[in-house]
Amino acid sequence: MIRYALTRLALLVLGLFVASALIFTTLRILPGDVAQVIAGVNSTPEALAGIREQLGLDRPLFTQYGDWVGGILGGDLGRSQLTGTPVASELLQKAEVTVPLGILSFVIALLVALPFGVLAAVRRHRPDGVFVSVGAQALAAVPVVWAGMMLVVVFAVTLGWLPAQGFPRGGWSDPAAAFRALLLPALTIGVVEGAVLLRFVRSATLQAMGQDFVRTAAAKGLTRTQALLRHGLPSVGLSVVTVLGVQVAGIMVGAVVIEQLFSLPGIGRMLVEDTGNRDLVKVQGELLVLTGLVLVIGFLVDLVHRALDPRQREAE
Image 1 (cartoon, one colour):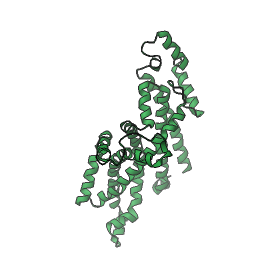
Image 2: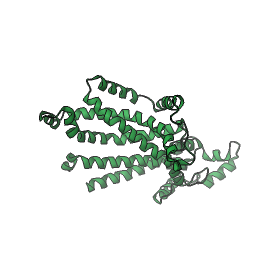
Image 3: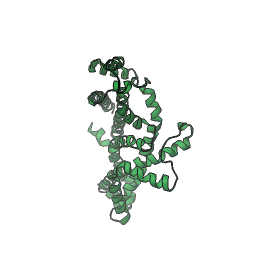
Image 4: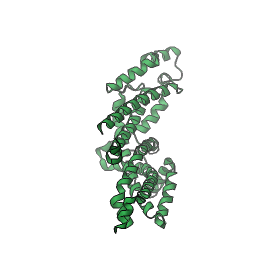
């Protein structure tokens, strides 16, 4: 297990290095000039050259990349080219919105997928099971923006239960208000991603129901549902753990869109604004943090799957 963990950790570090190179290179290919944004549309060539020299944009790209990676290894993501503020401090501030939003969305997705996925499999030939399966297929195809607008119309405009946009200025100093502000965005992401995960849970449950040990338990006097719950759920759990890394990536992508829709001051909204302003240092730091988060979660999922699956340990 230790050897496997070290191997996966080495792949994680390699993945972060490759991701940093791709992010840095891709952002330099995009059109636009941060010096033009700072100086204005009527700036002279001399002024633009001075700003580029001040920001270090006139240096070779390899040197700029080396300085950026060296700063990352020292815990420094750089400073904003527009405001001069440290990127790491701004990311920590915005993470107070994005991280709870992602966690709440993930919990809602699990609450939707696990019980209803098992129900759709166990009662697949009955009206309620068919209804859940068809509903999951429909929800999985719904764009997250459209789902968010529909939830706003129902819960914010019509019923008035939840705020439609914004986040408390005091942040989490008022936990109830902050939670209410995140609940509707989290429902939007969680329901859509939960519908996607539900299909995997249903498929894994059907596969577990066909296993010999479940049929043997049923032959000894247990009902099919009892045999599944007592002996088949570990197998279902292994299959679900395998796709959780993909689901986390979907939740992070959804958060970028939803933060714009609900005017939440999180990392996703900051990323969109900084991309428009061509603040390359901030954008590359934000993209690297988001990519790193997805890779780390994938790494943890692999370790959990390895620990839970005795077949992999026996093969080793």
